[in-house]
Amino acid sequence: MADHAHADHGPVDYNDEQFGKASPGKIGMWTFLATDGMSFSGFLLAYAVLRMRSTDWPNPIEALGGVGLSGFMTFILICSSVSMVMSIDCCKRQDRNGMLNWLLATILGGAFFLGIQVYEYIHLYTDMGMTFTTYAHGDDLFSSTFYAITGFHGLHVLSGVLYLCWMYSLAHQGEFDNANYNKLEIAGLFWHFVDLVWILVFTFVYLI
Image 1 (cartoon, rainbow, N blue to C red):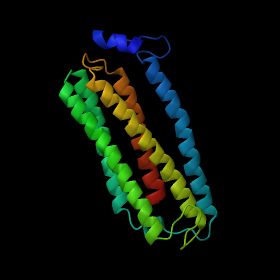
Image 2 (cartoon, helix red, strand yellow):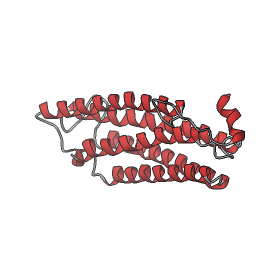
Image 3 (cartoon, helix red, strand yellow):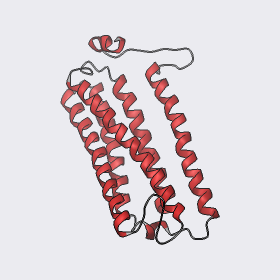
Image 4 (cartoon, rainbow, N blue to C red):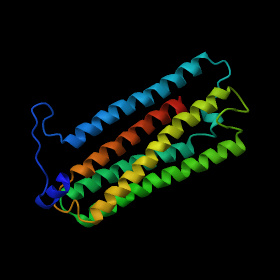
């Protein structure tokens, strides 16, 4: 209620002795992202340990059918981060149409990413013999860790898309018309985190 009330009076200036100008929402999001980052770190560390101990670990590039599709997915998420930045910038300049259009572009980028991931899973299952528990051409733990890590990230992308859809609804209702971009910027923090994590996943799982 307090944030909505401030929407009619422009952005709120925060000045805390410990956290500076960061809003309580931003502090909460940074705290969540720090703990969430530990979860991804655990997944990637487990992947590394299992891979080093395995004598039958497949070459990821060959097992996953190359990196062209996953590279394109990475490009989409990077572009969606740029469009998120543009949306917030338009909000600061009180460009309502620009804010809505760039936010919609971000949502579509996330949805497109999820669609490609579903396609990739179907391809790996039908053509490469990869299930969550078995892999026809090597260590079964390869497929288990692959689906666990990429699926966990995909869940974050889905959450982010739904989160941004909520932001789009608020923006359409005029929540951010007076440059009160705090909520939009908090959503952007989550989306940038999701994009950054995917770059790490792409590097460790697909490339190395």
